[in-house]
Length: 391
Image (cartoon, rainbow, N blue to C red; front, side, top):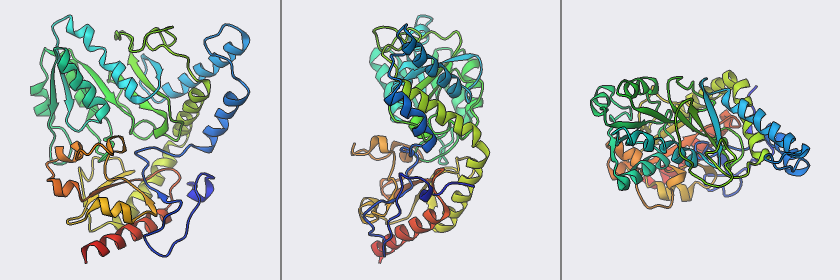
């Protein structure tokens, strides 16, 4: 049976008469981060408290820690394609930066073009754009109004000068699922590599087995913050991003945290064990949310999307005011990673939405520890606040 918030000690329900609840909000921002699974916490504690050895030390305590890291590596890799290796990083952003390093080897063969979808996370988009200062041609490839790339148009853009094509599996803001398998085939046809940000899809959506690199993050799958990973297909050459002792395959230097690795591994194992039950639970929540927000407009494809993400808009709503008013619900007006930047969502802009439409959009993210009551109460608070605005 799916867990409810009441079953997780990190949640405490605060009752309130209206949408101005101010304490312990209903958490519907699971694209930004997820609560730590109790099983993950329990797995991490011994490595934080008792087993303090450095996993890169040769003595018994070090070897014990190193063994835990390798168990975790296998657990995380269990949801990824075969024929590659997993490199632990501090974040998925670091993993993406590391992956883009593959362009240096490609540049020696005359390939100096990078193509990324215009809706990519800033970690991909801005990293790619930084290569424009290093002599690379960078193309932000447009999307359709549903947020899905046209394979025909993308095929025309990829040529024998292309080094890397980057496309995320599940978009963090609007939840659409790109045809990554087909995109990778197009990239390979021209001799280019395929880098995929699978952060929002890992543990939820099957990952195509023909990609070349995949960036993932623990805190999006009920694991700890502060650890990510890059999966790299065998034979791909990456220069070090962080120099030093060369602890991670000589590519990523720095002492690994056994606690974070073990937590990541346990979170990945739980995703594998709960694959079917999580998917069924999320679909129930998504169906309820669509009913409760039936008069809102969905941003992006209504069918080719991950059910746990609902990005919607309503004409005339001031979302900045809405978020201030509805303190009983934790939700987002866009990507948490870009909040405070003052920039409108480039993802929503890539759909062709006008600034006023972007400013009237919200993102709701459902997770393992939500229940139907969360959706019903959140919808009540949000819709009441919207009604008060539009009177």
